[in-house]
Each structure stands twice: as structure tokens, then as C-alpha cells.
Amino acid sequence: MKLSKETLITGFALFSMFFGAGNLILPPFLGKSAGNLWYWVAIGFFVTAVFIPLLGILAHAKLQGTMYDFGKKVSPSFSLIYCFVIYAISIALPAPRTASVTHEMAIAPYFSNSSSLITSSIYFGLVFIFTMNRSKILNILGKFLTPLIICILLTIIFVGIFSAPDTIASTTLKAPFVDGLLEGYQTFDAIASIVVGGVLVISMNFNPNTTFEEKKELITKAGFIAGLGLLIIYAGLIYNGVLFSSTFSESANRTEVLSSLSNQTLGNIGSAFLSVLVALACFTTAVGIITGTADYFKGINNNSQKVFTVTAIIGCFFGVIVGQFDVKYIINIALPSLMFIYPITIVLIILNVLSKKYTSAIVFKVVVGVTFLFSIPDFLGYIINPEYLSEIKNNIPFANQNLGWVLPAAFSFITANLIQLKKPVLTE
Image (cartoon, rainbow, N blue to C red; front, side, top):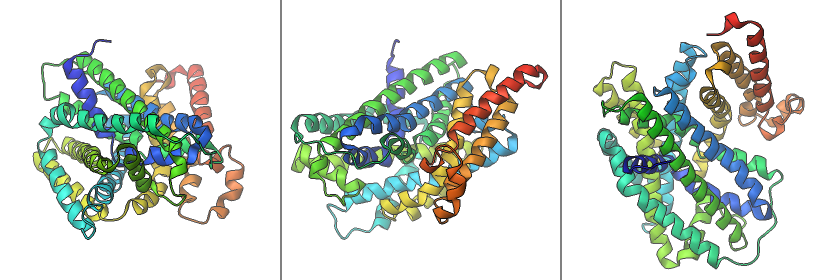
């Protein structure tokens, strides 16, 4: 596979838009708990934080439209509601979380009396400036910011591998693979793939001389570059979390584990490196989310630049308000929404990657409908007493692991296609 300079820059830019707050703080913490079964945790994490997001980018390469195209086979109304929910979640949770992580790890250690509100205000002021210069985003991210992020991360990882203690603790997780799978939800990478993938498509449309096939090839290659980067960094951070697990406090939270890891690998200078890393990684993701949201609403309003600007302002305003809360609080309030929207997102991504032969409108409707239905217990489990749902969950395979939707979705996909074979008139 030939990689041109443009492909590398685009791949690096895509990686930086993926790699934000959760991508930094989740893997080492997961490694801390994974212990001797870290490889099962890593595989589960890779499924939802690397493989599914990569499929999302491949789906964008195939569709080359907007997020609306992901759900339009279900129905236009469904797709509009789905897009609104995704963008609302994106600007209300993962984007503000990047400011919160930046404050806790890059500002507060040096300015103990600093206000998180001031941090989030300055932070999203800069995000707004970058968003309004969106035509330059790929170049800025791909040429300058991403290489710096990768260099710092690889330094921490490789130094950690060769300087870690010899003892690896036993796992504290009851279901390592499932725990890794569900922790991958918190990266928001599957959602990010359909948000920032749209940014990638629209950014390429600024060059009118690029054909559909050329854009498809470029997006596909960029997706694999970003996916490979995520795989290497995640594996390294999880493994470092495992190697240094005996040195972490049992009560250490996600940001404390990452801070401790950087200090133990890079010494006193580790804090400074980590501050730069956190600020860059979080910032690039926030820019990707706000830009993607503004692009979408601009597109459904006759390409109105005014709508783009207003949406960017609203997104940054939410970022300032929610970004002042601590990271743990934002992660906790995100869980119900993730249990509701993530299964539907995963199913839509997979269906859009598969051949049209197996993904007619009827198949889309049936599979998405079944997925939505069987995701309800997982969603309700985080907002009401789980005991009220115990009888229902006990009768659904894997429901007690918050994966009750998986088998019904697969079964409905197979069943709908078998029915289609017998009734070809129902196909598109």
C-alpha cells in the first residue's frame, strides 16, 4: 500500500481527532486492574476502541456523505433524530471532558488555586478559533500536533517497558474481556468515527479535483493509519498500566494513574511532558467534535456559514459549562447515554460497511429496531435500581454483562436476510 505525503498527513490528523481525553486516561487504568490477564482486557478494548471505529471510517469512505447517510435506510426521521442525539451527546460529554482532563492534568498541578471555569473558557475559546479556520485543520493537525503527541506517548511507553518493576499483579476483574469491551465505550471512538469521519469527507471536498474513488482510497488508507496508531498506543499504555500496577494506590483514579505512570517513566520532566501531551491530545479531539457538529448543521441548512458559526458557538458554550466539572463526574453521567446510543451506533457502522446485498432497508429497520429494544435494560440499569430489571436480564443472554443486544441483533440480521432471499421483491 503506497503512502503519499497527503495520506500520512490525513492519517495523522484523523488519529489526533480520535485521540483525546478518554484515550489517554482509560488504557493505563484498565491495565492497572487487568493484571496477568491483560491480553483479554486489551482484546476487548481493541474491539470497541479500534476495530469498530476503523469500520466507521471505512463506512465513511464508502458513503462519502454525512452522518445522516448512516441511518437513512431505517427512515429519514430516524436518521435526523439519531444525528441530533449523537451531536448533542458529543458536545455535551466527550468534548467538555477534554477540557476537564486538561485542567486536572495540565493546569491544576502547576496552579493549585486555578479555576476550572477559567481553564474551560480559554480552552474552548481556542477551540472556536481553530473551528472557524476549519479548512486548515487537516494540515495543522497532521503536520505539527499529531507527530508531537505520538513522540511523547511512545517515549513514555518504551521507557516504561524497560524500567518497570518485575512483579505483575493478578487481575481484579471478574470478566476481563467484557470489562475491556465496555471500557472501550468510554473512549467514544465509535461515535467519534462517524463525527470526525464527516469532517474528513467535507475537508476533502474543498479540493474539487479529487474524484470519488481517489477520496475513497485516501480515507481508507488514512483510517488504517489512524487505527494502527490507536492500536499501538492503546496496547502500550495498557501494558504499562499492567507493569506498574503494584506501584499505584488502590484508590488511584484514572488521571492519577496516568500522572504516576509519566512520573515513574520520565522522572520530574514527566509531568511537563504529560501536561503538553494532555493539552494537545484533548484539544485536537475537541476541535474535531465541534467542527463535525457545525459541519452537519451547516449541511442541513443550505450550507449556511451563519449556522456553522452559531453551532460552533453553542458547542463551545456547552464545553465551557460542562468542562468545569471533574472528569470522574463526567464519566459517570456519560454511562447511561453510552449504554443507549453505542449499540445502535455499532450496528449502523457494521451495516454500512457490509455489502448492499445483505443490507436492504428492511434489514436496517429490523436490526436497528431489535438492537434498540434490547439496549433498553442496559440503559435503564444506570438510572433506576438494577434489581427491578434482574428478572428481565436473567432471561436475555449476556444482559448481565450489558451486552444483551448482541445476540438478538445478530439473529435478527440473519433472519431478515433469510426472509429477503425468499421474498426478493422486498429488496431495494
